[in-house]
Image (cartoon, rainbow, N blue to C red; front, side, top):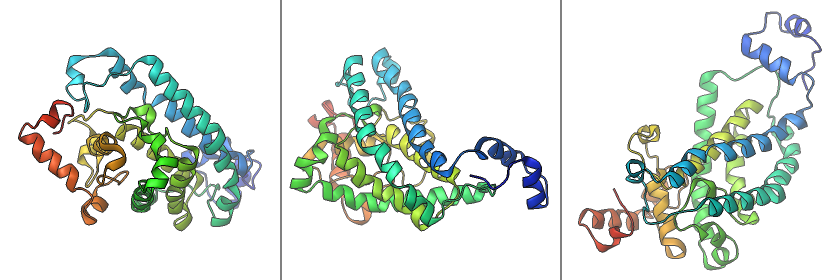
Amino acid sequence: MLPYHTLQEAEVALGRRLTLPQTIWFKYSANKPDFLLHCHNSLFLLFFYSIAPIPFLLMELGGNHILNKHKIQPKVKRTFSEMFKCYKDVLHTFVIAVTPLQIISYPTIKWIGIRTGLSLPSGWELFWQILVYFVIEDYLGYWVHRMLHYKWAYQKIHKVHHEYSAPIGLSAPYAHWAEIIILGIPAFIGPVLLPGHITTYWLWFILRQIEAIETHSGYDFPWSCTKFIPFYGGAAFHDYHHYVGEKTQSNFASVFTYCDYIYGTHKGYQYIKQKGRENSTYTKKYKMK
């Protein structure tokens, strides 16, 4: 909660007029306790999970032949009831795992110094912090994901997420509740090591959620803006990981591809891409570009 009761009091304390973003932030957050602002993260995650997959849902149901050319596993069709069941299952996990995890983490958020004051991040601060968060989460998430493919962890936990061998946007957070907590740790390490403003914290989890939905969408569009991001994996890269399933030794990274290249876990994917260029029987079931 801000230590000022009025805009005038804030301006006197700072010795200057507030900028427009600071004024908006003051009016929104002045009377809200920090705990409530922290809990906004759960609301944002739920909101963006509910709306971001809608375009992919409509594509799947619409069956447009132009868009279907970009579907990675074109022979797999999902019905509305199947997708709605996935949505309900994710909401259940959200209630029993995500929201409690957000609430429990509040003391840590206060301890590491996530600020809620009027010192909003600049554009550059926002950009570099989010980039660092992505890199940290991607590297740690790579190793956690590999561990989840050990036999015991896969059978007891990770197998749930791989029920979708042809993933859809709604299935991005579809997982065992324990996996949600385990994979939440790498996402949390970035803000711990490089704490910023609560708005940066919100934006980080929103962008990570949207990225996961795009990666699990099942569509690989050549005009996607993510094609311009260096080392970005994207939907085709991660879709292969789901297609192979438990036995896969490829494509463990969640966002970028550098870990898979460095540690040699890209070779299966590269082999299949080469076979695809040779029109192998494999690509009759699975489209590789």
